[in-house]
Amino acid sequence: MNPVLAALRDLAKPTPAWFTLFAAVLLTTFGILAIDTVSPTHADTQLKLWLPVAVFCMCCCIVPHHRLIGYVTLPLLILSVLALVYLLAPGAPFVRPINGARSWIILPVMRVQPAEFVKILFVLALARYLRFRSSYRSLLGLLVPFMLMFIPVMLILKQPDLGTALLFAPALFAVLVAAGAKLRHLFTLVGLAIAAVVVVLLVTLFAPPSFQILKPHQQQRIVSMVSLAQGEKRHEMDAGFQQSRAMRLIAAAGVSGYGKSESNYLITESGLPEAHNDMIFTVIVNRWGATGGLAVIGLYFVFIVSTLLVSARTKDPFARLACVGFAAMIFTQATINIGMHLGVLPITGITLPFISYGGSSLLSLFIMTGLIVNFSARPAAMLARPSFEYDNPDAIFQ
Image 1 (tube, helix red, strand yellow):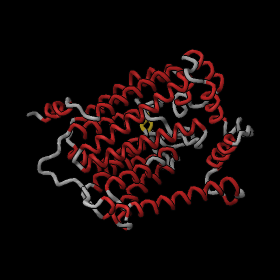
Image 2: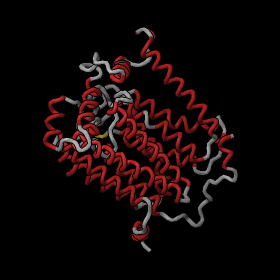
Image 3: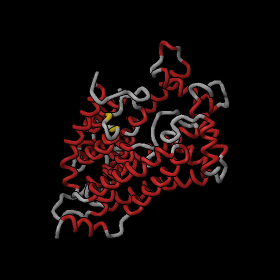
Image 4: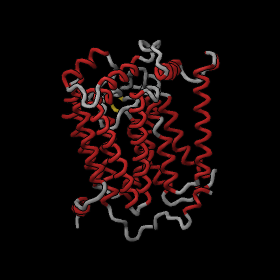
């Protein structure tokens, strides 16, 4: 049978990925309606330009066999990392700082954000590297996976883009756990990371300026978040302006929200920055109330759980690990973004998956969705090496 027809036949079979696709479509619909509340022009562009392009790219990712996807992952990752280097090159053509960050390549038809595609390629490269190995079950064997993360993260932080950089470590941790790395090794590293975060927070809040680690604007965001959590108002008009406005608009929305026209008026009058982008969750809750916010969170739950079910059902180790990495990345991104709006996390400039405005973001997310559908539909190869399985599940705790 023709490979394309065979792939379409496999796609027609019921799989958990149908729920993944369903959640992605509904989240995108929520996003376009929410963007239309505050910026009809951006919503029109998202609907008529980026969504068709994203759906086309998703369909292209559904057809190839994952062996082919695995073969091209490393070359594409290298190219994408070189694109990150290009962004930082002084005087690079088509690169212009936006909001102080050198994150986009400005082309005549669109702004391309390479970091969005590096996220996907990192997960795929990590899954391919770990699929038949056991070296990561030693502490020294974790060096290569961590280096695979370290290089793109350092380049993304240099842009600077802290929000995107924060997504890599949780994805790495989840994939290593799924692959069978020893938890005592991983929790040792996580403990060190948590200790480092605590030290940074203590230094930011209590140390004199000469001892500070973070940049001034990052310090201000943490200080303002703590101030707002304590009920203080001294940062509401400077570093805490964006977060305080978001928290007030969310708190005022009640159960059912204000509807489109009144939400447009309230959000516009509040002066909330980036309402169509990073702060879109505020728009959702203000327009549809707590009901809309919970509906969005529920759709993320459907997306993540169905993706993990795809991982559990597939016998291909590359596909299994990639799905775990994708689920961890979406969970982390959505959690950080929503946490920013609720005042429990500092503002980091991270978008809400499928919902925030952005061509590169929507394109990368639908590519991810297409890969998940692809992995779910493909039967296991008859002559493939066996998947990683452990006779003693307790070994990962040793």
